[in-house]
Image 1 (cartoon, rainbow, N blue to C red):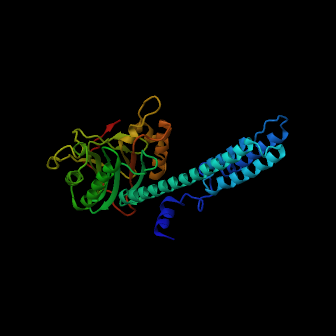
Image 2 (spheres, one colour; image 1 turned 180 degrees about the horizontal axis):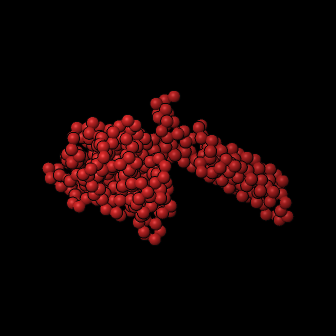
Image 3 (cartoon, rainbow, N blue to C red; image 1 turned 45 degrees about the vertical axis):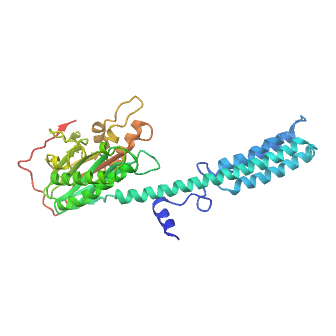
Length: 397
């Protein structure tokens, strides 16, 4: 097996095409019988009709129907040959072999068969190109947005990402969770814009975070590191509109003693769930602009500290979730719906939450949407120190 085939089977499933796909596109297998049913119907009508008008020209629809229900390039040829044979049988029975109607029917069947064969061949090639593009996008997504393990240090984690473009599987949202000597650190962000430039910007921010999270003891210094890397990346990759690009993000660090540190740069506030209580927005009193707006030397965001207790869950998300609208134009009430979906493991919570968002919208989301759920769950045997002086700085939503 070739390297491309190995990657395709591992990441994107079987390659679309006659050799590996038994299904006929979006049609069920039984749809393959439709051309033969149509051919039989034409013969039946011609045989039992008492009029002198022949329905032989209707056989031209048989190969066209075959091209619709099948993705196999030989199928229109087969049905075309059978339709020609049926035309000769019908012409012989009706004594019209030498008439123009039969000659025109034979020519029309041959022409429609050729067109159907070409159309199926082109469609298969387009589907193959789309499959290859999806494979590349999937590999790029897995390199850029790595999968999050169920357990990262003292927290259980889960992530759900949905790109706005159904076939792209990658967009401008970013996330990452790493276990460092300073504790567990995570980031969720949103790059302004779409397309390749947004992906390049997200890659620059994620690469900087994966380095800074391990090197910088202070979380606000991590944000400063990201600002410097983003500024350098934007100036190295000059393109139209680069001066208007920025990144909103929120950083969170869970220290070994259970204290959570949060830095927010123009991003929607995370939501904290404690027990069966309502979702609480961890908002800052001081507004900090997104990265890329200020000079990197002026990026000094405040650090918010929140004491975590075992079982506490914090949801980080992008605006694609809270800006999802229903048919009436109402935004998705994330803070209200989150407690009702917060049952089970973090992965189950995000799956239920995403399904609820889709039900609210009634269709595919119009923007990239990323959700990262962290549940503080110290490992057995580790000591969780009670917080005597820490206060929960948060606002009910």
